[in-house]
Amino acid sequence: MIIMRTITVFPMADTPAIRSAVRELEKQGVNIALTFSEKVTHILLNVPTKEVDLSELPAGVTVIGGNLEGSFPKMDLLRDEQYLAENAALTADCALRLLGSHLPVAFRDCPILIIGWGRIGKCLASMLKALGAQVTVAARKPSDLGMLTALGYRTVEIGNIDPMPYRAILNTAPAPVLSPGGTAVKIDLASRLGLAGDDVIWARGLPGKMLPESSGQLIARGVLRHLEG
Image 1: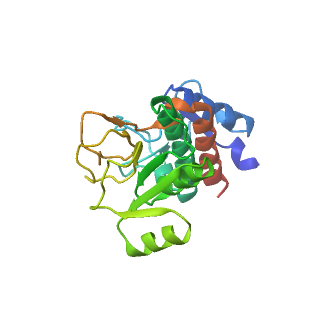
Image 2 (image 1 turned 135 degrees about the vertical axis):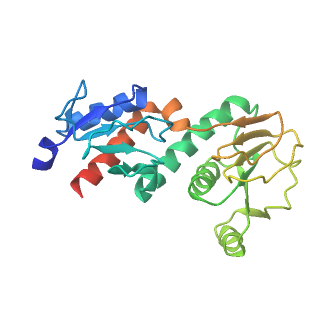
């Protein structure tokens, strides 16, 4: 497409995921700058984006990242519903790989609790059910609990969770939901810890760490979607 030839992206981060994104963008005809110059139209940061000084950013340059703050032109992938949905699937995939490395039993018939029925919770429940796990999902809304029952999942209300029956607990709710207790493997995937205790594995940013090539390709697809739109 002609628009691709008018875009020059400068990656301001050097991570495996960003390198993967750059390779994919180049394949699709996007110009990649090795150094910053007046030809640069977009800069590419990590997703999510941590603190970066953009005070000297030239006018008109678009920042690509996630959770961006500022009045500059931006392409925020963490406000892109399609990106968020696909990233949730990658996060769930990573979470199961991480859980498998800590769990001394097979997933089949294993009692596992998922806390939260958002994007990641839905992906986790589907994947674990396909593996034959005994999946229980904790949710707050009666409508969610009803839908979960209709889909064949065991349910429990958040606030009434007993950790003792489970071999693994996966939290996706970014608020305090469970006190210490039980012997389950506990993995917290939320942006803010919801599980308490010294035995909790806080697993943030898993796709970029565990599946950098897939994560980078996802970033590239999001960028291309915005450019073409």
